[in-house]
Each structure stands twice: as structure tokens, then as C-alpha cells.
Length: 95
Image (cartoon, rainbow, N blue to C red; front, side, top):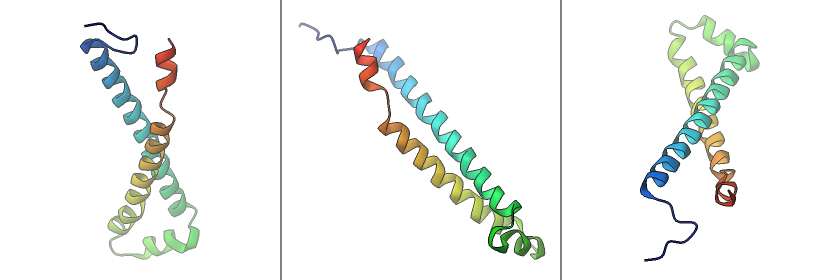
């Protein structure tokens, strides 16, 4: 059976798989950090009076988490999706 130039050995495929997962995980963490910082900036800068409302609340942790965590997840998903679109497949095959 003749191998094509694009075929990979099982070890190369495994290494490539872990590189892609690492690439996506790093992008997801960067997106989550960005979303977390945006959420905290909204609270710190008191945009829309959110920071003031939370400071007067009896239990401010849960509402703050309910605002910051979805933002972090949304940003993580958006950055990961853009990383999937921009994945360097063609560059690898040209080497």
C-alpha cells in the first residue's frame, strides 16, 4: 500500500492532535481571562450602576458570579471559535 505525502504516521497524528488541543485550550483560557476582565471592569467602573447595586446587596457574590461567569464563557467560546477558523492547517501541510 502506497502512502500519500499528506498521510501521517500514528505517532505524528497523535502529536498533531495534542498540539491542536493545546492550541485550542490556550485560546479558550485567553478568552476566559478576557471575559473575566471585562466583567470585572464593568463592576469596577460601575457601568449601569451594577457595582453600586452589588455593594448594597446582602449577598453580592452570587449576582457578581452570575454576571462575570457567562461573560467569561462567551468570550472563551468566541476566541476558541476564531482559533478554529484560523487554525494553521495549510501551513503545516506546506512544510
